Image (cartoon, rainbow, N blue to C red; front, side):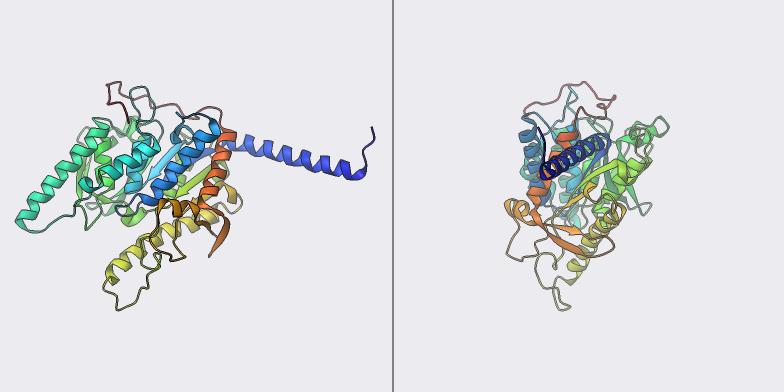
Length: 385
């Protein structure tokens, strides 16, 4: 049978597309997958919606209702409430499986939000209320994690906070907790979470000490300096040759970064003026949002030659059409930073972009690239989460 010129061109293009898809899949399989979750005050609405949608799509595309987010990522990082979510989905049960599903983690946080985030009070009566609030936080978090530590996670995690004693950021990590030379850097998971969510003006600083008592400091929410933990996660993967020996540059990484909505007055569609009663709050919120956006811009520049390997999902609320909802966050058109400045509005929605990322994860997945923590305690834990 003789093919005409047009037929040959069609088959040639189809062959090139097929070979390209195979190369991409093979390349993705070798990449280290990173998931990061921003902080954002006491709200988990936006990041929670993204996280649930991510796991739902994973289950649909794999046909496995037991599939979990951490099955497809090599490291999870989170700040503030994002850090609490990261710990919840990464903590391992007695069988080495994630203790919480994405939906279960979000439900846990929403169901206990009023207990955890109690505003501090001043005066003698306030001292008692602060102590009582701390007891409640300990009870709630211990109910989830018992005596688990940073070593008891399915995959490596990173959770930043700010040390008010040394006036410097401090990043909790499984790698540091597991290193034989740094045995004093292992912390109980409930304490990690309490430190991560100690949001100034809402909760008092949290006094934390390591399991062996050799390391201690006073922590506040890492969102004050590192609300978007993506840069910390990328840097960690590049330099942690124990967990990630094959990572030599950003070309070896696949990053999914979840924002948690805008905090600033400007981002929420409100006009910020010098006469506003919320000027101080606006300045603080703009600063926190600014840190997140700067990190996004830096990573966009770093991945300029591999722009599809870094995906930032954020609900910006630029249309000013009212309060953000989970459904609206997913249906909102994506916003992408442009290399060396500016942003552009994409045709795809946030939900579409998450689905596209999941397709790459599923196509490239064979088995978890990192084993469960060898330090996992076998003590029985509560079921049904």
